[in-house]
Image 1: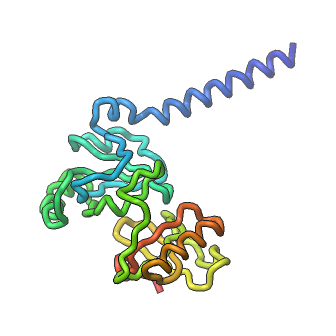
Image 2 (image 1 turned 90 degrees about the vertical axis):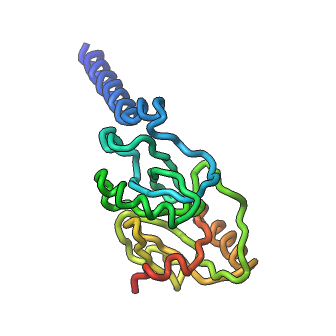
Image 3 (image 1 turned 45 degrees about the horizontal axis):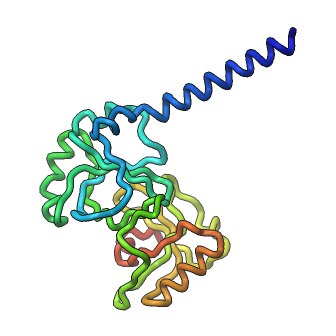
Length: 209
């Protein structure tokens, strides 16, 4: 009898946990079904937007999106879910809307080129292509909080950056052309499957020495 009671209690707890997890995961479900939040699977033009949020998990407060008509949702390979508003054909056009979005309460928003996003489902604009006149670095990881570069013990030249989206980036090396692709493939084989190439000049202004 005691065992039956224990099993009943355990079963009830597990059921409640499962139910609670489902409810938490579905808090934005009605926003997606109403197209107020649109999950983006593939990158396509127009390529410029205004990023309003980047989190490790979707926000658990649907009212965060109450002031906007529609937000695009991107699940990225660096572990973050990003939300953008608007679609623009150029950075200049997008910048004109920044004050308006800030007035809605998204004070940390900024313009992004969504071609820089790497989606978990592999939905990008193309396979890896490099410009021989561009110097690339290989991004190893991205974190909300900083870590010691010694965490990446396999490498001697790890660089740390802190761009405008308030996420720490860790990269290695400076390569061009085919060498960049070879290094990317080598680093992926070392246990960094989510690594990808980033033009070094894009991160350089945000480097932490």
